[in-house]
Picture 1 (spheres, rainbow, N blue to C red):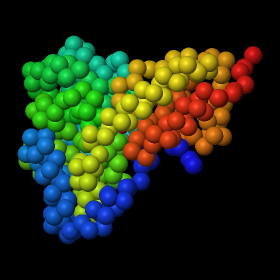
Picture 2 (cartoon, rainbow, N blue to C red):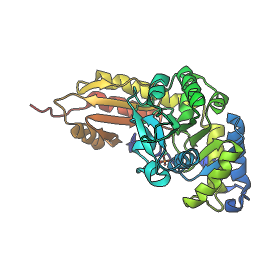
Picture 3 (cartoon, helix red, strand yellow):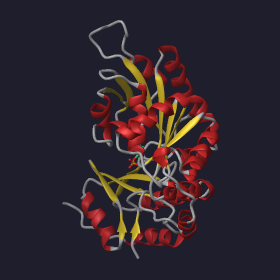
Picture 4 (cartoon, rainbow, N blue to C red):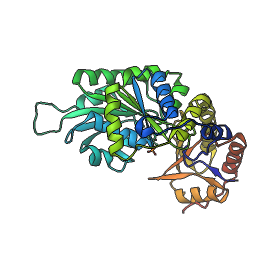
Length: 345
Ligand SMILES: *Cc1c(COP(=O)(O)O)cnc(C)c1O
């Protein structure tokens, strides 16, 4: 049996989800005529108290569309140096929107309102780019599934309002934060201009993200999604998986978080592990000792059919998810306890 902890994107649809998909009522969504897609969009918009929502094939396309809505070419977006929108979207902010990024030196992917305030360019100074957007990520991906302090997000909102900046949330794993911190979607809907949500991460759908915003934002998003090649036909079969995920897979995220903490403890007990980052949700980031080769650690687990990923610079990552069972957890703990690796001398 293979145990895949590379990402929470590796899950396959459950029987219940497949059944919901197969029985979905569909239509041509490019004509806005797929009832299941409309149902998913309406469900999320009303959950977050936003006026409108739009279904996307990927979180990257949803984020890239939001950036394009909020900026003009040559302007600047403020985000963390570890942000997905800067690091893992192929340079799309520059290519699709023609903007530059002002990278903040945050803590595990999170920064402060003060840092934002100090990074806003003087709009009267013609030599420097116009700051137009602040993007935050919750939970942070590269930051190890960390959750923002909601009061800091509110303070950043105030800075945005004072300086006429748009405020976007990359909420690929927002539901992990909501469950962990006992927060509500409405709180986030009230704060942000636009929010992207991934259905294909911890929620376990095979594909799909949704962008939330005002009617005006979503009207623009519709045109940009078409431009990016993301308008799809009878895609209600996939949207049905998203609806099923929202109905069945939100509360259970807590199980992923508690399994991650159990693994974190076993890693701390391992003679090969130097440090484990704080575990708040379903992502575990840790470092092996200086005398251990990180690839040897990955390979030793692979020998035992446990797949984890290396993020470079001695950083290793495991992510728990819907398809990672209690039995698998027991195996991982046992194999971590029994692990034998040659150390460098
Ligand atoms: C996964 C992810 C996305 C979107 O990724 P896709 O693979 O394009 O769906 C965006 N932001 C963060 C933080 C993510 O983890």
